Length: 442
Image (cartoon, rainbow, N blue to C red):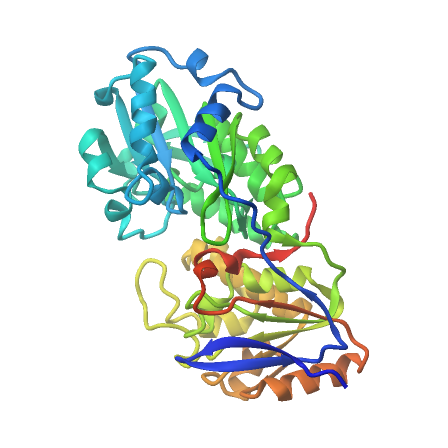
């Protein structure tokens, strides 16, 4: 008999090994790294001057134009600012096109994320050169109303963005629950949209479609892109990164066309593993999120549903030593959410549509609860007891991974196929690799 495959994971500050029978191990979900670009800045220039689906940037932008540069809180803030300084190159480039520094506003676009370290990420050198603001989705006085999308989402967008002569977004593409992927038109919604706009869009998770990894088949992304078209996002630059993360490719142009070109280019290959749905799917979230149960849901359990047969079993392993959630009662807190989660998706949807809860937070917890209702999920952890886990919707709960694996094999048979999605710690990839997922087209 072959020795089991052992995956080392962090377990409440200690190392634990998850052992998978070699004869059953069918797929290990991994990131695919491409060589980093030798000259990322020149690649960005080449992409802007030979864009996809629109005119080259030098032909679109006029001297003395009032320009907003929009960047988010996913890698490109560091790329433009304190880590790589490419924002300075971009300003020099705009200067040569006749756009003065005083004509440029850099808009930090966190959507509804708190982003407390945004100034450190942008860095003083870039902030000293141009006016820089952080979008605040809750500041209604800073928003302009643009109408509604065809899906009845009222669109409020940052006024600085609306009133500019030219809007250039700089972002990054990786899997995401709501938009299916980061990148493209997400720079506008949720990036620089108002809170009510974000909530209305995110409520759409109640549609039964698991949106992770979908673009054209994703009703939420199509709504985001319609809002971005209303806000006249003129050009989008999106980078692809490896697990380090270093830039491995660049796309630019019309925000829909360049985004789809990136997905068909290297994006899916970087983030997705081609596989058939497994009988048993094991995942460990990594990236420091294993302390509380709620922190582990985002993307990870959505990917598990995609990678598991409809009658399959998911094993969710994490210490959850802190229990259900941190005692956080802030804007996006999950400390008092356990009872509603136990009530199930109908009651969560009711609370969201009535705006009795934070819809952004609950859009994530809703989809997690939905997976628990559509798949049998075994929880391996220390901080949740079996009775509590049952009330939360889990099939079974145990502190022993070996016990969980034996139970899953008993449920699915000794010849079951097993897929594994484990993010080890510590590695250079822990900042991004938790987004890796099974292959999905559409």
